[in-house]
Length: 624
Image 1 (spheres, rainbow, N blue to C red):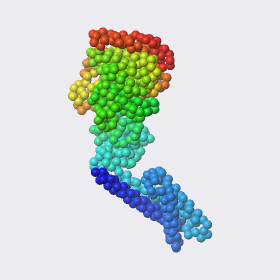
Image 2: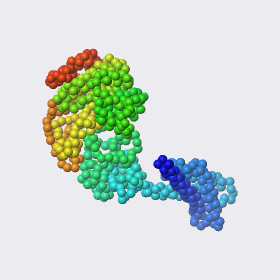
Image 3: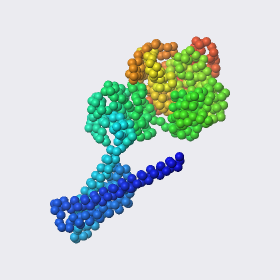
Image 4: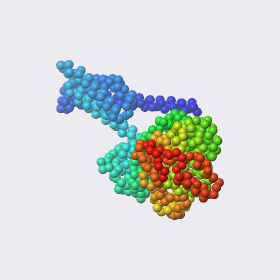
């Protein structure tokens, strides 16, 4: 098999070289003909279309000499060796420069002569005509090749592109240069009046957002691809609605923040997702991020198999760490994580650590032996309703598990605790337990030399157990969508935004802080349910079930008495957290009566205990 592959590669190389030689010979012949024809035409027009006897031969001889000089200069400049892309501005400049040089040399050769074979204007006019002929030959070749590169009309889907900005034009050119492509652009739409009647690759802008239905009927397009790089959700919903009403399929190009690492290709086109349709702005692109502090460092991610933890691992790997350690108690989650990272899951590498936060001695031993320099603590129990019924589990995992990790972090340079907006003014077991982890983290920051801080954000779209995931499952099962209350709202963010904030915290956060992202306006869950129901293939009803114990109608980002300070970036709040001495949580009894456990957790959140925490500017935080 390797020999067959090498043989095929050699054949392909010979074929490409032969094709390049034929193209070079063809352009040599065309350029020679252009110089001879240009010189004869220049002499002919100079004599008012009546050449004197012998003038044709002399003009042809001068053209031949010019062609020889042109070929010599072109060889020196490697014009025929594929130095510049065919038909590019660089090639045009190369051909023009070579032509001007040749005309100048021929003219200098004629000036000293008292009896010139042709008028002195012949090299200049002939050179201009030759340049026109040469560029015309290249244009014809490029046009023929571009037509051959277009997708096959018989096997491709005719599509309209909405949005002719940089992203849309990049996608259009990618489509027109893929002969095996599944999409054939037959028209474009854009709201910019300056782009009306713009043509790119024979594809014309036909109108704006109000012309979707008309353009679909006019062109026979069966799909519309939304290619505006950073559009608001309202525009996406409007174009999607018009597309579906016209009987066409709606596709989108992902936001530019998702395409920053590569050029736009046809494979980037995808189906619309719920976060595309949400009425909230994405702020990740506005947050500068440098992961230089992670490069070459030993990094540990707890809860690595979860939604946040796995995305953290993917983003941290891009920073080229010295070692990435991924810890989780779920072996299946670690299997899936390794498969997503390296395309295989042998489970035999030291980077995967199977351990439970509840194993205090085991966690201490791991951190002591592996010596991580940066820890991202994402492991936690996060289902609010379950923890209301089993608060002892929150104590053992969220509180004591976090404490086990913190107690082993004397030599850690940075520790980032993943918290939740439910820790602000908490009323649930989940909120209480995560608020306590914030306070324990602040206490560790006052004891240890490293930087210890927390990151607080809202619900993560499409994470395991999220409202979006639940709605999708209900739609697949043909069940009604269940919403607790018609007016309930939540702060929603993508997993990429959440991880971006975590990495941002590792860069700019200080001891005893919780960093909070400005997530814009909260989203009404009823609106989210309607958006997903509209995408379903059949009618899906919405049923209201009522708020459950521990649930709020509206979440808070900042707790009562917390001061919103933004010293480093206008989109990131730095909130000081009062420290909590670990000895105070040792009195928790996870096996006690449920009501007593909840009461004890609430008391630990309400009463600041231990050393006074300091805010981001060094100002002591007053208890609240």
